[in-house]
Length: 163
Image (cartoon, rainbow, N blue to C red; front, side, top):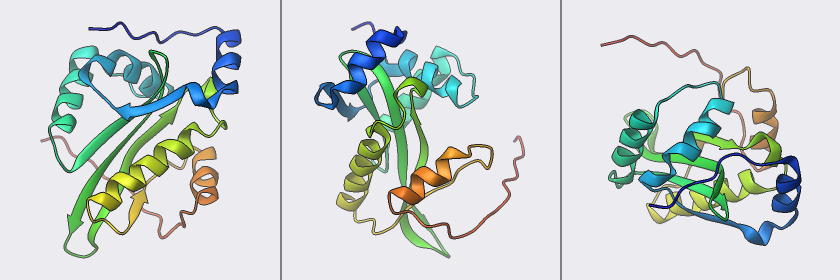
């Protein structure tokens, strides 16, 4: 198992984002858990390695879900998760369930690349629409999504109950 580096100096970030050819995208594997955790913390969510690994395992084995990572060498600098869904009222669609790019690497095109790859994955599955929900506290997210062609269709509240 390769060790994934998750800490970077500001000089390393400058070199990294200056050369997009060095950024690779691929499907996530269980060994990416530590890198995903660090980025997930930037969204405000705490998760332990065991839980992240279990989530990844479940998604990796679900043919209607995907997690992709953006890497610079072995450093995870972004991830996106998505699922192909069907609902009675809306039909079949893909939904981006999570997206984060390291705060030091944002506005460099990495998020756009992750979304583009996810759109291609969804299209291969036969989905003709892709959706994303974003927390209202993430003020940059709506600007990002509209800049790459998404349009706001509604606002809603989310309710949760432990079972």
